[in-house]
Amino acid sequence: MNNTVLLPDGIKIGHAQNDFTGVTCILTDYAVGGVSVRGGAPGTRETDMLSAEKSQGFVNAVVLSGGSAYGLEAACGVMDYLRENNVGFKVGDKVVPLVAQAILFDLNTPNEYHYPDKSMGYSAAKCAVSNGVVFGNVGAGRGATVGKILGPQCACKSGIGGATCSFGDVFVSAVIAVNALGDVCDHTTGKILAGAKLPNGEFLNTMKAFTDGSLAAMMKMQAGTNTTIGCIMTNAKLDKVQVNKVAAVAHDGLAMSIRPVHTDADGDTLFALSKGDKIADLNIVMALAAEAAARAVENAVKL
Image 1 (cartoon, rainbow, N blue to C red):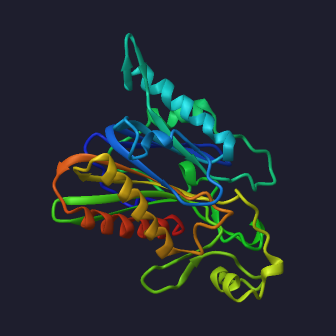
Image 2 (cartoon, rainbow, N blue to C red; image 1 turned 45 degrees about the horizontal axis):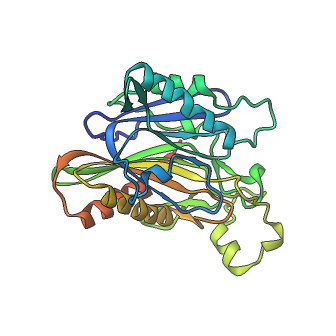
């Protein structure tokens, strides 16, 4: 599936996967980076580095991965690739690639499972491209599912989706792997696109089950077994404080299309990157980020 996303100059995206799980690598070309972690059970690497008050102003790669905590190994492969290409923070005669990462839980398969590892991360970085990025049941979205309030057997298949929104010559793109506890809805109509299903094939409506308590005793959710992760990218020229604000507001897009979102059983994390020279009002960029995130989530389940 091709969601036709625009990428700022220099940014590339690559996927690698096996039959169970996968890795998506975003090579940033020294973009200004930020992050916002909202879910109750996140799994991340180097997110403190991206905080607005920290001294480091750029990041070399963002990695999205399945495999739960085991998947954090994938970033080491991306570091190897960048080091071989002399990309990173220069310290004397050494180079240290700055690689941030978030992982999702996709260990629900009853079959043999092979975790994302260094080689998979390296492969994702090596095959990264700037045009024609493929989305769907690939990369970090390989083993993703949504609507798990009744357990994985009642969930729907999901994946990784992309979307771009623009205003004049400024654009914001979102790439999001959706593995949420909640349902994914069309944010313009409220219609459930994917989520927990009852034995008769109808959608349960997870938000309704949460709010009216009718199925509280049937909830099968477990902390850390879900999570939506992604990256927002723009060609607008932003500083580190502004990029962090974009990452934070992009979560509004998740709330528009995932219901419920940011639960204690999710580890929702969004990165944001600024790579470009376009001048734009920050409020417009943030609005575009939320809309792009919502559309990317919906595209992730349209397999």
